[in-house]
Length: 470
Ligand SMILES: Nc1ncnc2c1ncn2[C@@H]1O[C@H](COP(=O)(O)OP(=O)(O)OP(=O)(O)O)[C@@H](O)[C@H]1O
Ligand SMILES: [Mg+2]
Image: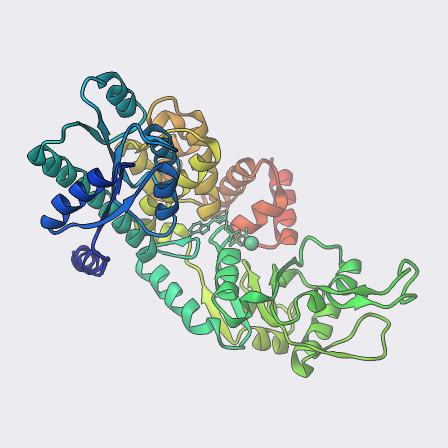
């Protein structure tokens, strides 16, 4: 309620502070230009004049005109040439065409090509004023809607991150506050909650934005290569080191190094990373000299790092160094009020890539999307929307366009109901759930472990237990 109110007020202010709208008159006859100028100025309009189509185009490059009033036939570029330019380059402008008596066909042609209206010469003052008024108020209304739309996206998003729920607004706030500090940041949250998006938002809102944002996925690089990837190496440091090589820390100088899936970093490298962070120095593998480091570290993880510390799989001292500030991204199921906004935003994104017209989502389909548990969080939602946008044949996404798993299972509550119905033990429920997620992730054990919030070793152990039981 209150935000709708704010929108109105801010919109009014935006409109009030706009410069007075100005009308562009285009005619090659000096007398005609003067006559029209007088008529419109008398009504209180601001007016500028141009002597042909090209002159008008030049003026439109310097100033916005909500309305252009142009003659059809002129020496130099005529009205239709100008109309073509306006439709293409200034779609927000309404063009009114003046045609000579008896040339209705050209007026019709102009309307077909996108003119707002036409007037036949000799011009009747009443008719002229009425048409200009209509053209102007229509153009201004369109501008207001546009501004309102931009305002809404600004209020409910931060860079690319959409969210209107309380926890997401707090996260936007936190990003703003930490961006310019130098502290290291740990971003935690389940798979697909937007950790990388937040890391980028921090970088691009900090003073480091002019320097690189360098992401490293610690889980994707083989253990043996990770050290030289991160720190670089000198020639001859090991058999394959044929030349000197800069590491990712050096690539990120002045900017941000994003250490994704930090829990997967081997112990040996954790020690080296800790040293780099403490001494603010990096040393290439095999080098004797160190380089001073000016890099902000943002680490991310979807496992509980504190538990990794307890299990002695992650160094406690490094944990505290990285976790100066923690940004915790809540799972999507805990902020369902973000779902409609995300659905529309992601649909828009997917459509602009596909050049397809889909207006929105049927209420029944939206209800199911709101109800579903989203174990893969926003990434899963993004995939579902992209699929639906591709499949749908009408102008709205329907239940039939959703994957069967979402159409049929109605949310977390239903899963529990079903389990209770079958009187399942916790272990049976766990095994059933693991099988379901594995199937959903197309058999990818790495992603499955992510979604389940367990490490791969635990998943393998559970899978072999399940196999033994089967
Ligand atoms: N709040 C959001 N608004 C818009 N898009 C989002 C939002 N959160 C996530 N996404 C989109 O969802 C996808 C997954 O986000 P991202 O890669 O940042 O997740 P992640 O937490 O790093 O996941 P993982 O742990 O699996 O690496 C991306 O395509 C991202 O653009
Ligand atoms: Mg990620």
